[in-house]
Image (cartoon, rainbow, N blue to C red; front, side, top):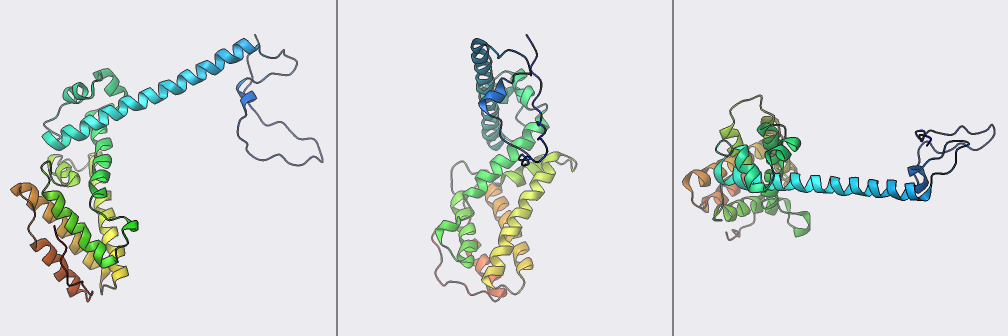
Length: 254
């Protein structure tokens, strides 16, 4: 049986309109026929198509295994700590073999680097208000800290995933460090945009102050293992007022 040649552009004859630079492969591109060769038998075409679908199904199954490993890591790293959680326990909790785990994450460091963005995205999603809430810039800033106070009262609260990871992994060259820094810059960027929209005298300075207050509040609640006090709201309002930002008189309930 002739081996199908790879797909290549067919030159156009002189004067013919130019073909598009790229096009999507069609169904027949799965079974190309070289010049002069007989068409591929339909039975072989169906067999090849079935094989393609099997590969696609396998890829989905591989992703499912990766998801189970990551979910197990999120649960264990948050509850037990990163250093106290071994790969054996992650594998056992995920219900996968260590071989399957290492095929997707060559080392524990790779697993940590994949875990941290997922855990932090979920964490911040509960704290940063969405645009459809219709809050003003000042209300958005206040809501971040109101949500932080509410979250600190949850039974499974363990603090900020980024701060926890940075405390456990002191190696400045660890890939986790760059990820952690990017998330803190993201938080500071959010506060900067809200401060600018609120008309703060120095938005950049206010953003740094709010980020430091946020990190400090997280550590305060995690170390004491108790909900944050209402003085957090008072502190935020004091920082806003110092930047000549008009602050609503009503204090949000926590």
